[in-house]
Amino acid sequence: MVKFTGIGFPVFYLVRSLILLCLVENVLSGFTSSFIRSEWPSTDIPLDSAEFAVPEGYDPPQQVHITQGDYDGKAVIVSWVTMIEPGSTEVLYGKSNKYDLSAHGTITNYTYYKYTSGYIHRCILSGLEYNTKYYYKIGTESSAREFWFVTPPELGADASYTFGIIGDLGQTYNSLSTLDHYMSTKGQTVLFVGDLSYADRYQDNDGNRWDSWGRFIEKSVAYQPWIWSAGNHDIEYRSDLGEFSTFKAYLHRYTTPHIASKSSSPLWYAVRRASAHIIVLSSFSPFVKYTPQWLWLRNELKQVDREKTPWLIVIMHSPLYNSNSAHYMEGESMRAAFESWFVQFKIDLIFAGHVHAYERSYRVSNINYNITVGNCYPVPDKSAPVYITVGDGGNQEGLASRFLEPQPEYSAYREASYGHAVLELKNRTHAFYHWIRNDDGKSVPTDQVVFHNQYWASSPRRRLKKNQPNRQISLVATY
Ligand SMILES: *[C@@H]1O[C@H](CO)[C@@H](O)[C@H](O)[C@H]1NC(C)=O
Ligand SMILES: *[C@@H]1O[C@H](CO)[C@@H](O)[C@H](O)[C@H]1NC(C)=O
Ligand SMILES: *[C@@H]1O[C@H](CO)[C@@H](O)[C@H](O)[C@H]1NC(C)=O
Ligand SMILES: [Fe+2]
Image 1: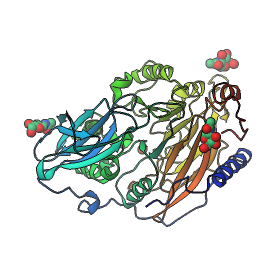
Image 2 (image 1 turned 135 degrees about the vertical axis):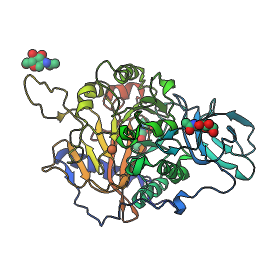
Image 3 (image 1 turned 30 degrees about the vertical axis):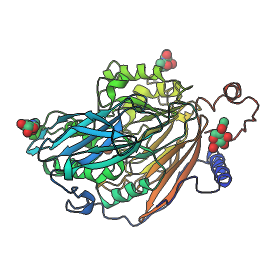
Image 4 (image 1 turned 90 degrees about the vertical axis):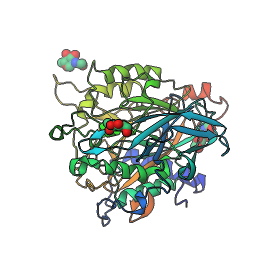
């Protein structure tokens, strides 16, 4: 059921209206949506609901999920859980459901206070062909389960690709609405901006709510990769329970391909997919100068090849620009550490979650801040990224509805509703973006923008030289 695709409208009308929107927004100051709807109760779906049903058969594979398994999109990590016995670690796969290939994985498990996890399987399928549909099968006999996924196109400047962006999802009826709306878009991969299950809201951080969440999202993530980043609800440091390690459930359950990008931690890493270079940062791991994350990011930014992957995207949990009273200024420390790099390397977009609302900034920076000479207000900066907060997946904590007034000049659009975003990378110069509000169960595209690539679209000479010299380049508003 396709409720909104973004290209379902006549293309001319869409492009024209988006350009007008950009022009208008460049002139006016920000917009605070007055949209208010009666909030659905922010309560978690009961454990015995259909959304969390365990598949049929004896000890079936459950909580099946995939993520990118290498740097460039030719590998997939398949993960699942069996509750009673370890079972088979084998994944059968192939280009048809005859499954002529197979791979063996590994099993891990963990305890968290009184909770003992099931057997968590992970298996890497590598050497895949680009742009190909693969079928895969896990489990045995009557408990066997079959899924499929499509590999991304080969890396390339004009490789079109559509990402969904979801954050702070949890497992309420609002979360379900967000998930269903996302699944009705053309999204091919999710960039998840942290705070997954909210199991930490339960007594002793009940691990059963990690299991139910894994079953909840399976209908999407078994068929397309979600690129993970961790949030504060994933830390689960509980010294009172003797749980001194951090991100224990998250790290056991949601593997990331960090070694492929030479990262020393699964919490920060990078992947390249189609025309995008995606950098995942950890807001709740050390990132100041000289720390591993800082050193890694400094090196990773040098690996970026905008000729091959023009779209440079960063995801993290805590937003660096946020005018909501919730989590106000919590991103300041990372802004101080990394903002000058974000401007220097002309990052296109930075997505964050944490604040349970939606907000999009203009291209601004505050890199001239200097503690000796005093305050510096963020200023328009064409080299700066656009900051987008989508912490509005719909978890049980409810919406963050108190925006600070007046709306700061850096803030372009803000609204306290649940929803998610979709980013369609069209080619090296253009990306269509929209945020989709959950409007009492309906999916309503709300904030729509055309983004022009910070590398390919910022220099007309580069475009003329390298990109079809005899075609006239229209000088539409750049944003
Ligand atoms: C993991 O599973 C094995 C085999 O059932 C069991 O012996 C071990 O205690 C489990 N480990 C943890 C940390 O629960
Ligand atoms: C901060 O301002 C002081 C005083 O104007 C100046 O000497 C210093 O170089 C500035 N620092 C930076 C990093 O720009
Ligand atoms: C890139 O995509 C945009 C939007 O679809 C289109 O207007 C533009 O002509 C495309 N550029 C090239 C070089 O194909
Ligand atoms: Fe958060």
